[in-house]
Image (tube, rainbow over all chains, first blue to last red; front, side, top):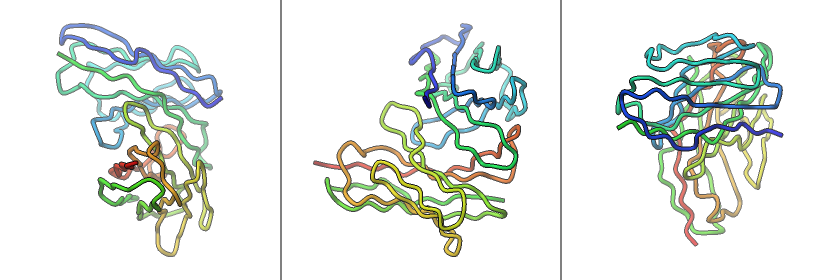
Amino acid sequence: DTEVTQTPKHLVMGMTNKKSLKCEQHMGHRAMYWYKQKAKKPPELMFVYSYEKLSINESVPSRFSPECPNSSLLNLHLHALQPEDSALYLCASSQESRIRNYEQYFGPGTRLTVT
Amino acid sequence: GNSVTQMEGPVTLSEEAFLTINCTYTATGYPSLFWYVQYPGEGLQLLLKATKADDKGSNKGFEATYRKETTSFHLEKGSVQVSDSAVYFCALSGLEFAGNNRKLIWGLGTSLAVNP
């Protein structure tokens, strides 16, 4: 099973709302990622968790707050977003290794619209 | 640093035509190379990968060979179908680590439209 699931599929939120995106994988991967993708562009890395600890924050604004409750789950909490944050948010996971370059497996994404 | 250059699209083909999407890279060390595909309205799917020089990755009729001498990883398919219409991204493992794994360096993507 190489599936990464994400909920919700679509989300519309106002600039004062608080919402959360959820991601789950059951492949035993210990690295999990959040990416942001604008239309027809490559994904941009936002956060990386390694063994449930945040290891990379790519200078993402604090209105995005990641959380990794356990090795299978990854959340992205959203608060006071701006219209320019509207995008497809992708979760990915991979095995961990500093020696081998393992591939990342992506979820279907959450399409976020900020009004 | 490592980088990926991908041919610009859009590419428009008729069904059963031969497909090549060019991808060249610059890299130090021994990166792994990947092709990801994104169908309309969906997330990214790993299409194929190669981890060392002369490796050939293949999946669903697509192939790509890791050519160190030409620093290329061109994607090919002998006979495309309408269902292959998607955006294709070439990527390689970079020098910088994200946790214990190397960050992916992405090409800009090539949009493919296959007409019946």
